[in-house]
Amino acid sequence: MAAITMKNIVKRYGDGFPAVNEVSLDVRDGEFMILVGPSGCGKSTLLRMIVGLEDITAGEMRIGEEVVNKIAPRQRNLSMVFQNYALYPHLTVYENIAFPLRLAKVSGDEIDRRVRDTAELLELTEHLQRKPANLSGGQRQRVAMGRAIIRQANAFLFDEPLSNLDAKLRGQMRTEISRLQRRLGVTTVYVTHDQTEAMTLGDRVAVLRKGVLQQVGSPRELYEEPVNLFVAGFIGSPSMNFLPASVDGTSLDTPLGRFEIGDARKAAAIGDREVVLVGIRPEHFEDAALVGPDKRAHGSVVRARVDVTEWLGNELYAYVPYEAPADLAAQLRDLSRELDSDQLRTQAVVALDAASRITAGDGA
Ligand code: ATP
Image (cartoon, rainbow, N blue to C red):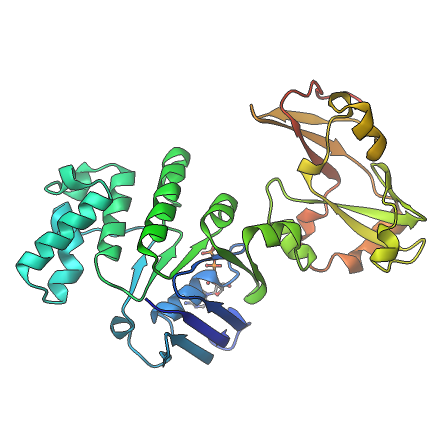
């Protein structure tokens, strides 16, 4: 096992915009690190540089104490699981899992012992003599995992390993990967664009945007203390609402109504009458009809017309259209540089308790 240390890592393809731009990131020994970000942000490129499948344009990559920039992939002793977990179709499950040990010329007895231990761990014992074509998607994924973990690698690297599975299986595999990683305690770097995987699997999450590292922290830190608008908008599902607002003493005037903020304006050093972008998470709204008078007195009650509702069983999403005054909208362009344009919506998403009786067309 080993820590992975990246210092000012750059990757340029040709002379274009850098796919990875000055990324410095320390993955601690035994840590489960998630790399997350929108499509094209450079997360797979970074992973491929760790494993050695891609040259590093500039910067320093260490595995343990060793600088590996010029070290061949084989010598880095890392195990990688890909999205399309490429098993050998003509080999049995047993031989697929044994493959890395055969390559390493491990003795037959030891191979047998280790394949059986690994199969036991992944609940594949009864399938050892089958071929991949006769397995379910989840079983195939476990074989790919078995092949990765049977070697005593310095670290495991995963590139969206669950994206080809259906939602239910993805949930099951997620729990299995988490359990396995904790049990084996191996340094792991895991690329995903799936919110749930990012928030549930990792000890820490690194958020990338256009090749630039935005923030590294525990899932809770990213959710509660995002360092910029991009991270605020990226982490959380449904994503945070960003509303234009003008500050008026101890309240905010937004297209949804007036929100009381007490001393928050002074604490944030925002001037009176300043135009700001307010981030409100959907789940931080409540249906006023469901909260007691005490709570109602503490919060701000806003009235809005609900356009569409979606009932999910455990929650109810209500979509509330709004119009931002033109003068505010113009000033917002500057404030919202870190957001993708679709994040400045003209509707707010509100996540309410499933017991809410709000329906489309209601003024709630
Ligand atoms: P996704 O989630 O879509 O897989 P990603 O975050 O993993 O995206 P990368 O695959 O790392 O993104 O790509 C980062 C950027 O580098 C993209 O703009 C991509 O087009 C570019 N890129 C990736 N591979 C190459 C290549 N071989 N040649 C040129 N450009 C490339």
